[in-house]
Image (cartoon, helix red, strand yellow):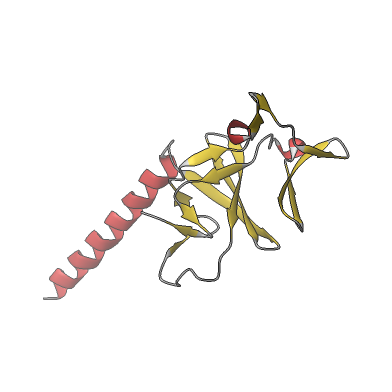
Length: 138
């Protein structure tokens, strides 16, 4: 019986470690390195293939606590859309963002402007189709 318990724990921990290695080596997953908040907006800083992404998500208190909440240090399969690719158009001409001291900022509501960060290598803002607040949908 004692050998069975030892083998069980050895198998459990070896499977757990190999699962983490797959996630860390994956080129398709984003690693969350920082989470910030501006008013009612969440900002997730994530890396993938040596590129830094700034992901914006509206925070809503109606989400339940049992969701798959994004955590700093975790690896996630975000389905991203670029802000630049979704800029509104009028008669086929894309509208330009508001420049705040020569930095591109976007108004998300009457109190919230979120800017790109060229000094950090962030030249665009992104949204994740599979993210509601900080909850990752399956």
